[in-house]
Length: 263
Ligand SMILES: Nc1ncnc2c1ncn2[C@@H]1O[C@H](COP(=O)(O)OP(=O)(O)OP(=O)(O)O)[C@@H](O)[C@H]1O
Ligand SMILES: [Mg+2]
Image 1 (tube, rainbow, N blue to C red):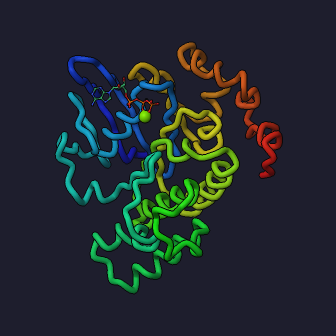
Image 2 (cartoon, helix red, strand yellow; image 1 turned 180 degrees about the horizontal axis):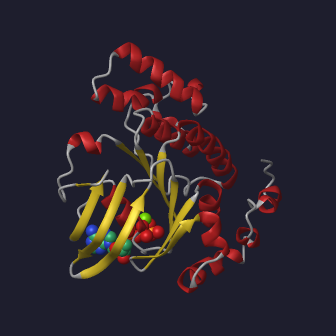
């Protein structure tokens, strides 16, 4: 299968400090790709380069095998992507207005916008919040609005940078479960940055372990977790103390049950 995005010999430097060095890396259509690693590993930088929010210092990024001019990705390409961050960054206004925004910018007819906003509010179970001002939402509600806003434009790739990190555990589990079902229903390609192995284990089917600006290991999530190389092990072992189940192919249900959550 041809990749959607390809990185070739990428470096990213700031004030002469090397932040990323990635000889090659790909995003494949339909996958849910996880990027995990410690603080400062370069995960967010990698996501910003792949979504053309930032420009590499050297190397090439290709979209569908075509070179994208560094720092100058065309608007029609950038509009194929959606990005959801840890902070939902909602605008002042109602939930409906926020979710409608991407379609409004694309000059979609008002009737179609209304239908689509209603559909995506329904999918994220936030229809009852339509008229609420975003300033009054809980953290979990705001993140549902954020994800609906990102998905309504039917992106070719959804980029996610720690969207669940600020949520309390039960809220996070419920949203991840709903989100996973929605993503499986649409088949959207996703690139998901997290430092939480449980989130990665639950959501992703391919995983890249990033440490010190390098992708140390990538492959199917379960295989990487079961057979980490030496560099990946040093990161994963810290997690396995808390989630021994992660080395098996099972979701860590016992931990969830301890927290009073039934899947
Ligand atoms: N604009 C910048 N100027 C200087 N240093 C930067 C800049 N952007 C990122 N860095 C540095 O690059 C490194 C990687 O940052 P990045 O935000 O990509 O890490 P991360 O893996 O997402 O970390 P976290 O888990 O804390 O979100 C860090 O050491 C950071 O301080
Ligand atoms: Mg980050």
